[in-house]
Length: 278
Image (tube, rainbow, N blue to C red; front, top):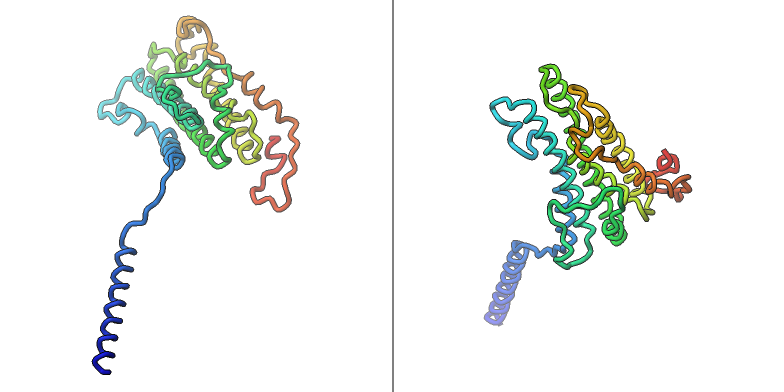
């Protein structure tokens, strides 16, 4: 009996030891996490958002970190390059996120654009297929690019004032290529509003459009004159002025006014009619 009991006890101890070993092996092994294509797209959009919001000192070239002081003309060109890249990356990011097709033929390549003053139907249709949180990620990217433009514009003004004090002959008009990109950005932002019904997204896009006009319209107004050299528009912008898409933005916003919105009881988001109206 003692012998049988002893063997039973040993077997039980061995079994418990084996179970402990298996538990340790399972707990130490990495868990398998399923990552969907949508998850990758969203993380990519968040990374892109941080990039287009970043300061000019690390974006996009190394000229601003050069030990030698570059000429003012070259420094201003770097600012224009930064503006172009921020807008291009933001628009491509939103358009690709809204592309619901898996066909390679529908991919958007760098440099591809769309005519300003027109609604981008692919963005409008693509946004309608995305849940609210993912639409908000798209709007965050556009807002971040605009923040970057504000940063660039402040540097641009400082450089212009320096060039005027040095009596530089460099034209102080924003290049037509940059204004065309801004016009496309305004049209794209306006297209994001079409069909939007969630108050949180509506507030986000309305603020984006309001800020877009505040930041970009003064740069378009600079086409009317040149502070330093007083060059004619036709001399610096072949083909005439580039139009800001004010009509497109108005047409996108107008259907929402007057605002008819009554927040539900115990609304955790705190959005009011006045917030949307103003």
